[in-house]
Length: 108
Image 1: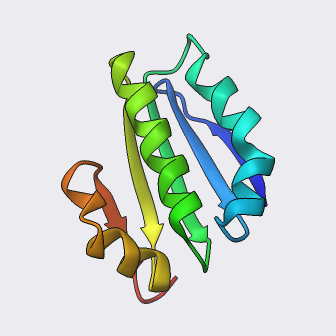
Image 2 (image 1 turned 90 degrees about the vertical axis):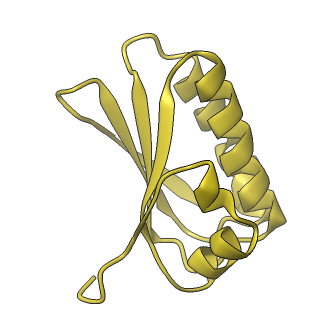
């Protein structure tokens, strides 16, 4: 799994996730997520999940852990371009009641 960092002009950081958010993938990106939390020049983080086709409990754990750490610093987290199985899991676990989620359009 890989993360592409896209700095937005409004102090928002877009993280585009590429690959499955499973135990193996999440262990690979954990140091990058830790670094994001420690950045001082951002206020909002957006996770783009358009390239994520599989999400398991490790992926949910990584998202929730990131959300809690960002919230403690008064930063925000949102999820965009969520589709398929990842969206089903997020809705089933009601993650979208705490974290804003934008569903991928059918054209994507």
